[in-house]
Every structure is written in structure tokens, then in C-alpha cells.
Length: 202
Image (cartoon, rainbow, N blue to C red):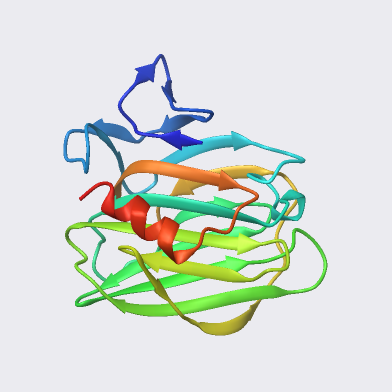
């Protein structure tokens, strides 16, 4: 499934197998390719409610849920929750020049604690960066930045929810542009596939 943020019909942006609804967020020509979506403080991107399927609940995945996207511009020293699957996956990022800090939560919807991964990666916080991240149904996580896999510090994380809601949002003072969103249900991508996805836009 993918959303390029190039086609808007009414209130929705139409993708391939996935349609999303901006809430306050607006299209911009400052994009990696075509158009992108600007998500400013207090705005969000609603990816819908997906009960009983991998996108909304990682326990329903055959293996894992993987999400890739291009993100441009991070506010200095401000956390933002750029992807939140209420059924087990959450990614938050913060720019601390010259590094990008990443928190990836992979947690079961209910019950025992899952895993939280913390990353500090050198990167340009002002330009476009390609993020790929996945969580498996056993709470194992992976993060790729600009085609390269990175390894984080593992910490405990609280359990997730069960509503199946999926969104992209901001934190106070945090903003970004997002472009070329791709979602794979049931698949944990290998390094070669992620690298090819990244190189395909360069």
C-alpha cells in the first residue's frame, strides 16, 4: 500500500490501497517527488481505523508491519510522534543537530510489556531523510535511515491499545513534511529491499 500525496479528492488523499485524511495538514510542493504533506503543530494525518488487520494491530500480522516514508525538516529539540498504530507500533523522532534521535515502540496490544528501541543517528535534520521501520508480532523492531540499518538500545515499553486507529501527528512545536508513504502488511523487509526502495528515489 502506498500514498504519494499527489492526488486529493474532496477531503481525502487517494493512494494505492490506502486513502488518508489530513486534519489541518496541507499539501506542499516542497516534496521529495511531486507533492508532499505539511504536518504542522497540532495537525495530523488520519490513516483510518483498521481493526483485525495488520495495519491496525501487529498481533494480526503474519510476521511484521513495515512502514517507509520520506520526512523533511525536524524542529530542533522537539519530539514528534510521526507514526502511531494503536495496536502496537509507534515511531517518534527529534532533531538534535547533527543527530536524529528515534524512539521505536513495538508492543503487544494488551498484556505484557513489549520493546522500546532508542537510536541516535548522524543525519541532516533540515533535509529529506528516508525512514523505514518495522515491528514484528513478537515485538522485535528494526529501523533503517537512508537505506542503512541501525541498531538501538532496547528498553521496556508499556502495552498498546486495541482500537486499531492509525495516525501521523506532531508534538508541540514540531513540524515536518511527509512524502511517499509505503506500508507492507505482514512483511519485515530485509536490508537489500529497503536499500533498493531508498535508492529508487535518488
